[in-house]
Length: 276
Image 1 (cartoon, rainbow, N blue to C red):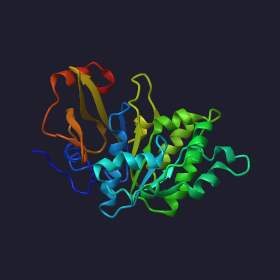
Image 2 (cartoon, rainbow, N blue to C red; image 1 turned 45 degrees about the vertical axis):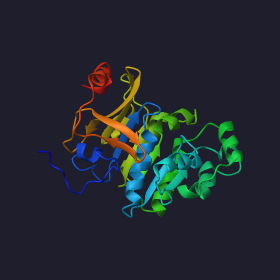
Image 3 (cartoon, rainbow, N blue to C red; image 1 turned 90 degrees about the horizontal axis):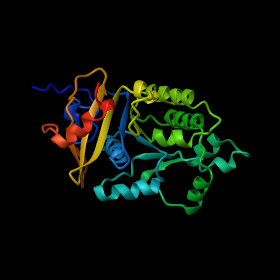
Image 4 (cartoon, rainbow, N blue to C red; image 1 turned 30 degrees about the vertical axis):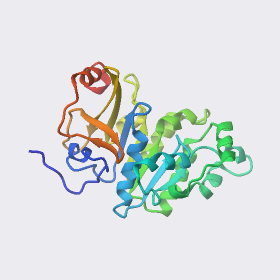
């Protein structure tokens, strides 16, 4: 018999809360990893959406995609994302940094409602022309926003892009450690989105985050199969068995009572980073 714990934070993903014995432990950061197209951004929006439905304040830090594109992508799920706040953290303000600091420019207008997000060709051109962003400036932007508004849910999408776009003059590892520690101290239940870590690298997020949920997407027998694993979940018992996952018209759904097929299991066992 599985014991479901109280005082948990729902992920919003059908079936996953049962794997986590009721949901996430509140006020902690969690890593959501996976390959491109595995459903990580959908997971993040679904998590934030579950919060706003319960009257919580939710903030998405968007680095990968323009807010308007995210809004259009989730329309197919029928979600009302108007109450999700979004911090557009892509460095479109960089060209102005000679006159005013990046933090001052970005913090003035970076945060708004996801419903209000609109595509702006001029802003997108600036983003393409100025690929660098400071991790420190993002941390200051986030610190200011968290101080002004009490968010109980936070999602950063994605840490991988932040590393790739980071200012080359910055001590990246130290800056990332500082950012992740700050996130862990906000008392918000947070999702940090990233590509699956390399077995050879011990990235800061892998040991600072209190748990890791990994989304898998594999082509098996000419068919795409999706499944989910809970790699770690500190402070709680959890389901360690890989479970099938699908993306439906309602978002991500996990079957917590079914095991993955033999082909999927072989694909997992062939990658030592997933076990051990």
